[in-house]
Amino acid sequence: MKITYDKKIDAMYIKLRTGRYDHSKKVTDDILIDISKKGEVLGLEILEASKNIGKVKREKVAIDFAGA
Image (cartoon, rainbow, N blue to C red):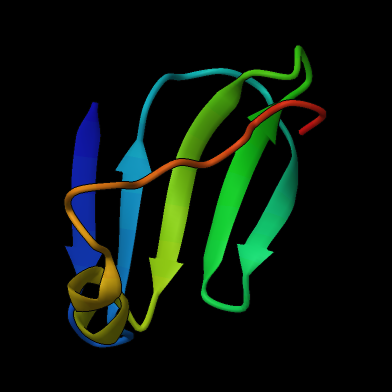
């Protein structure tokens, strides 16, 4: 896993694995999931990261990747 942050555009990317990118799935207006040609989750992009990271409740976070 590799996490990068671009301060200029306030975006964070969490790279989970390498693979051939196929498409992105929109979770919210500010969160996108990159999907490989094999249907694997490659990473997550979080726009307006400084605002959105603080909104996540640490006790409970669940994202359903089925059918991504």
